[in-house]
Length: 165
Image (cartoon, rainbow, N blue to C red; front, top):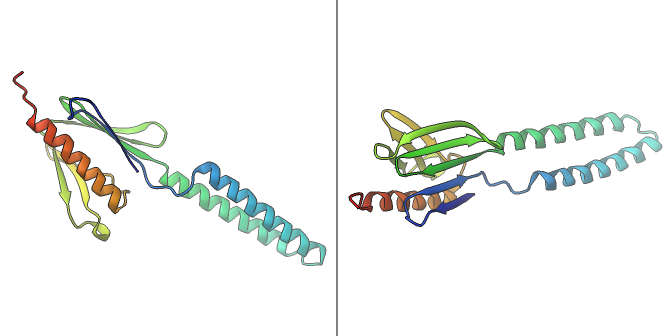
């Protein structure tokens, strides 16, 4: 998901990049509890008719589902914030708060777009003084195109601004 906030001058602002998660953590936990309830009802039924061996395996199944959902959210619950100011570009990456941050001088940094990346999704990176970093690697095709369009607009406005005022 791409969320854009551009200031009135047209060349400063920030872009928030988040992976596309189909369901929220709250919704996934609700679905997990429904699956638990159904599985336990079935397991208890089999236990009552003599199939006691179903209980440990249904418990193991629920544990594996729980671990899978948790690991999925740990891996995909992150974001990138790209902030454009007059003199620098700041990239922050993290889960709930910035865990890593990089600063690039805006006048010396360049945005590179490789048109045919993995699965024909364009690859976007920023480069300055020999340091290069990919941005938005988790975005889908349409989101990446929106991100590239926003980047082009921000950089075009920045380059066309009359700095002699």
